[in-house]
Length: 171
Picture (cartoon, rainbow, N blue to C red):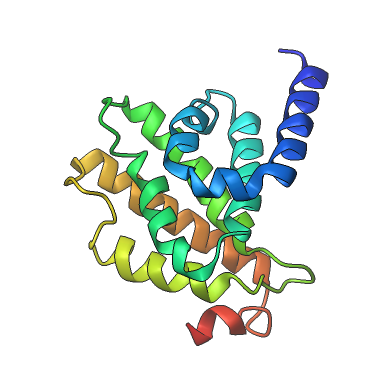
C-alpha cells in the first residue's frame, strides 16, 4: 500500500543480493521457496521487482549451473503445494521477467549469459524434458510454456531489429 516502503524493501533486498549472490546461488532451491511469495504476489509491480531482483543472481551463475537453476525456478510452478491458477499465471509472469532481465543488455543487445541460458531453456523446457523430478500438471506446464513465450517476446521487443537480435538468432 505504501509505495515508498515497497521501494525501500526492494532496495534493501537488491543490496543484500549484491553481496550475498554467491551464497544465494549455492542454496537457490531453498531461497526460491521463500522468494515464491513475492513471485506470485497479487500486485504486478512487486512481481516485476522480484523477477528483476532475482535476475541479478541468475546473471552471476556459472554456465554449468544455469540448467539446474532453470529446473529449480520452473519447479516452483509444479511445487508440491498446489497453486491456484491465478498464482500460476502470476508466477509465470514473474519468471518471464526474471528470464528476460537475466539476459538483457544495453543498447538493444544481450548479456553474455544469453547462450548459456537460452539453449537449455529451449532444449529442456520447451521440448518437454523437464528439469523437475515429477511430471507437472497441465496447468503448471501451460504456465511454464507461457513464461518461456513471454520471455522470448520480451527479448524480441528489446532487440528491436534483426541487428539487435543476431545473438538470439545464432542460437
